[in-house]
Length: 159
Image (cartoon, rainbow, N blue to C red; front, side, top):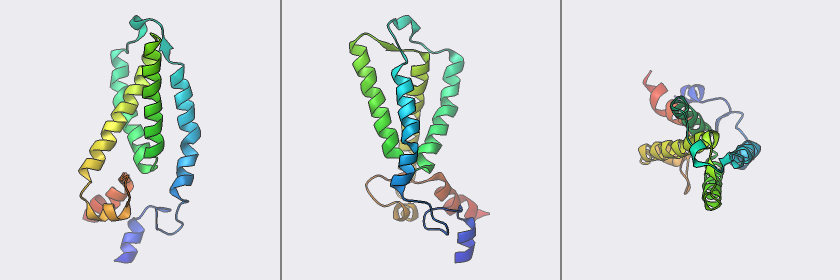
């Protein structure tokens, strides 16, 4: 039975053969990505509120973008880095608002994508909050289970 569980486990998953480096190393790999996103976001302000709107087609793309970031945050176990970036973006928006600068469509898209990601992560954690196996696998104050762990535990075992 243990061999079957090992076969279902993703290669390099935590605790498996060829285990990945620690969480701090994995988070460090994403620092340049989030830094570049934040730098891009800081340039997405306009002095006119009229230019601070998003086309309808762009609103439709917020959903797949938010899902992508949700997967990146949960599977990559980079919630702390994500939340710091989100709060930095929020602080920048509030600071620029005092200067009467507003987000343009690109900034709104990125901000809405991050806000949707935060909502999806919160729903994901709430849904799996009482799962005893995942709670044991992801101990600590910040509990964000990986989708792959959920899949191997609950979905693939049914087949």
